[in-house]
Length: 81
Image (cartoon, rainbow, N blue to C red; front, side, top):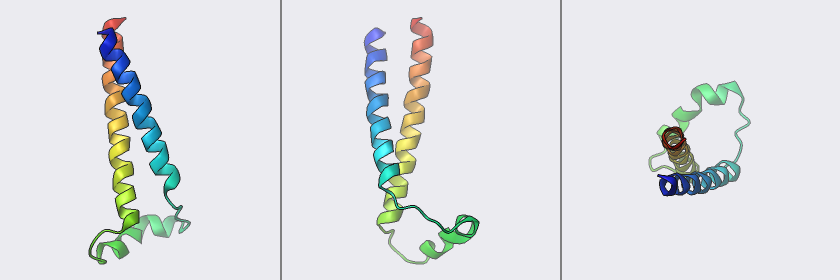
């Protein structure tokens, strides 16, 4: 069980660095509230997703991976202690 905890801690650190990379490499959208509400409709009619849309997908999935690894690590840690 200790080796699983160590592996999950390493995986959490790697996923955290990847998530940080994706978040820091994206351009900020200074459109304010109007860009938040209606900004996605413009990109829906462009056809193929662009680089920004792909970066957002990578960011979303790396955030989900970070949350899943964190929850599993918390469960494993509570059973080891």
